[in-house]
Length: 366
Ligand code: PLP
Image (cartoon, rainbow, N blue to C red):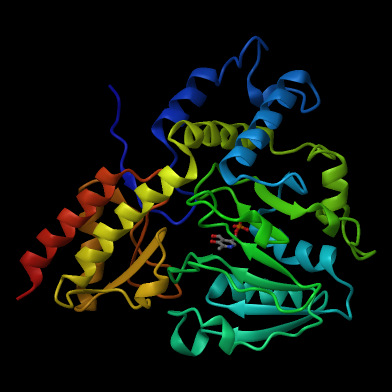
């Protein structure tokens, strides 16, 4: 008897599309004509090469990645990129700029301080990370090697809808897209580097994707560990050492699925619809539920909210579990509720959550 799957609102690792899981299940024991599982294959054999090459080409198609960008499948999570970026893009004496809209951007900023002169040119901390500034009010360092943003702050639910232009003539824009990667089309050519841990929208944890403009390769600081050197990975097509083969294979299945769904324009439309019904339910609750994030920058991926009667939050989360909706607890640093509704969360999951919210409110509003 088959157990029923729950609706998983976790921020990461997050839910994967059922058809992808079923395909992986059908291929788990034997992949193609290889006579073995993807987990057992040589990463240098023709079967795995076909898997990684297809994953890359589907990702290139989805994001329309220009030829002058390299796509790398790395390990160590997005957190490793917090150090890899400064190590690869600048010398210890170089300036770099950070706009910090939440905890992840703050972590990236603190890590960069170890390897270069990292400047915090705007922080939303005093406003509890609920905003993104208007870009002209920020003063950038014209000699900065890069300007770093976190495109979607997973914990605070703040998402860039457009991007700042770096002002320095050699400054490139760098973005942590871990939690909104492949959720909508992106003009890659605006960025020097985009990086993302896979475990929200595109696969299991264990693989981190880096998209880097080719002319930025080859300037790593001498102390850069080989595993963090983008040029080494680019020259070796992400096969310098044993890559996270199985995680890359699953990402490939997800990319294939996203292409089949009509690509990122189609995905973005679905994501907007899901987020809209959830934010509407919050905003139309007469204050029973409240989202602190400024409307224009609310994340389509992570929807944080609180209950006016905060003592009801525990019960809300527990009752949701009993109805098959799990991992709705807000991050331990901010509390409240957070519904992460990545690509693989179906509309039916969000509709069920909204119906539950209305029912819960009706019971407790008096
Ligand atoms: N950046 C963002 C925006 C995240 O949401 C996360 C993890 O949740 C990270 C970085 C850290 O990623 P990892 O756990 O892959 O190191």
